[in-house]
Image (cartoon, rainbow, N blue to C red; front, side, top):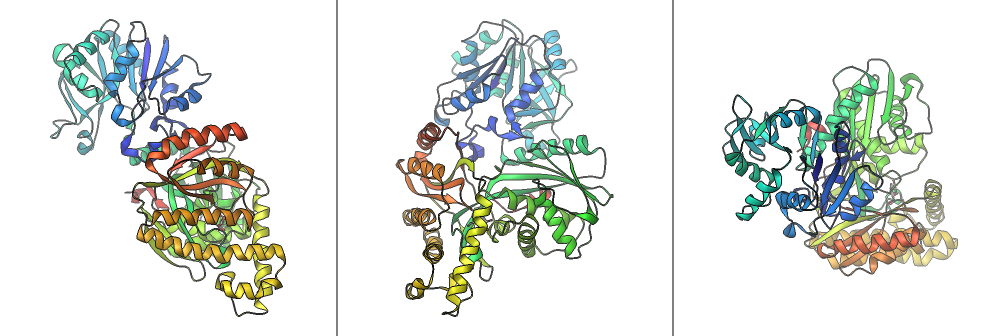
Length: 620
Ligand code: GLA
């Protein structure tokens, strides 16, 4: 038997997330979506080949994914965009023209399911052409799928692709079995009549009228990952199952989601009482958590694949592991007299660790938000960032500012926040970039000096402030005007002078950048990003070799208006303001050249501004 997995679509409903990454390679439960299908296929005997049909845009990514995998043949349908797509039927034809006839099992690459395919194949072998059928409780969902009606013997007597007025709750799913000798014939007949090559369901709608087609009703869970909410649903479903597997049966769990963040501009200004302008991005930490009634907190992360870390609530100590971030939150809450019991925490995340996108802020905020909700601690939302910051400062020992925890808690979809860190007043600023996007390029390096150097920068700023306070009535470095700086700069040691100058200018730039964003002056915004980078490189000295290589390559691309290092520094990510038409070239060229020059494979992400941390039931 041969298997065809359809992965050549462009997933436009999930743009911009899927503009640079195939939907089928997005991670669910720590592995690419398609690997969940491969795991199911491993249980089937007699598979000869697994054809994964993709497009030219993501062909290289699939080749990397499929390297050294057994039986996998990756085919490129040659299309480069949604407009050029061959369509699901066109892609099936593409595959069968390149292989000898056989029985075929066809699966859409965005199906995630629990059922065993053996029963399905055995049924098909007995009956003939067979498709998967699933009862869907929400009738509205049927309108997005194909609907089927089966007779007593399981034969399809009615089939309608995307029905306006569904007649039953049975949906057809794109898992098809074709016995040897039939697929090519019917497919050619269908396409020769000039029928739509796009939606697989349309072929079945045609087919069941000319030949017997059967439906096999699957009982187990199935997801069709068509949009981001389905993606989250699937993640939480699997996380819930894992929670029970790892911690045993227990109370009902609660689910939370927290985003990562990127800072547009305003770097190393937060702990100097200045302005920052970050937004929350569509990379997430997922949490399944439940009370365990034991006065013990248990932590596990699928990202680290290590054992459970258990801590007695009456004796919270540092573990020198990732769990110190959530533990720090527990410790701060205890210290402040909040009363809560034991809980089991299972985290999953697609925010790269140490990647400058604040996976640490996200895990702190999600931990506090969840404890607040499940133990009714009544902590006001506005206080959450400050408690999390305290956890990181006191318990973990990183003297971070407030930016990360603030945006991860308070973020609003489609908006950035302009936060004044001297009084914590803030405004939402809609991100309207027209034809431009914010793109994140990850250098995939995080230097071990980072946290030490970060604390050092803070100390240098404090040193500068202390000296200047002898001459001026200022509370923070952000109160300083450029004229005052010029007048007293000679009082500062040279290194400190550079740090202070960065803070003053970066603060001005951030205010100007917020006006650019409001007015839609994207070009000027780009210039400010570039100036910010140069200052971070030369005055604040938080760049590194890999960041500079990435930046140099970035600036070679037409359509880039500005680019800079984002976050704490010493590796991590760059944020780039780029025209949408240049993105593909960017990823190919910058990706290739960066790899050649550093030996490191970079990562890219087109950012969407999303809401801050939420309980999953509140998710829109
Ligand atoms: C890290 C810190 C933030 C901020 C940035 C630099 O992300 O957590 O508080 O200081 O670095 O702007």
